[in-house]
Image 1 (cartoon, rainbow, N blue to C red):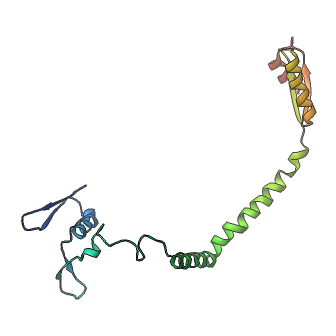
Image 2 (image 1 turned 30 degrees about the horizontal axis):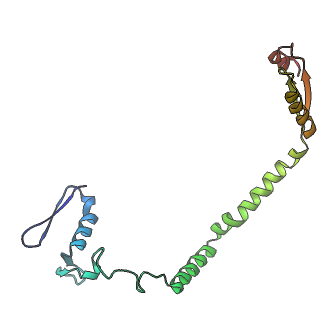
Image 3 (image 1 turned 120 degrees about the horizontal axis):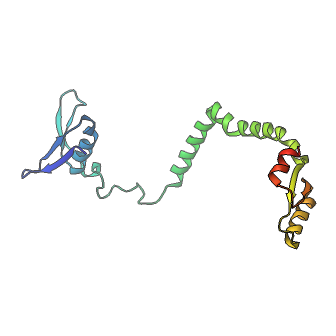
Length: 163
């Protein structure tokens, strides 16, 4: 991780850094420990101590109204998100219009698929009542044009030559 906070006898936090991208981890460790930090807002560095409320996981850091959700805040967030959503024209297009366009395009492409008929060659090697019922059910469907092939004929050869 590259971060090793150690407390010494004087309640100071010492941190050893191996990589420069560990700075955020260092700042979080300092805040969690409630240690002093440098405040540069005034232009000159001033040592300040984090208050208990700013420490991560500190007592009393729950939501403002306890652990309950405030319906007004939820409603306000929802309104803000919806307004932002409706202001984005490309988002509106790809959410509502584009799916309708796709449905219309693919519907017209595959509209004639309902009346298609498939040619199916069937070779009943089993020749039992159940296999005859299965072939009859395919014929009743209406989608298949059944061509019965004699069991003595090589089916692979028949399919190649019967076009």
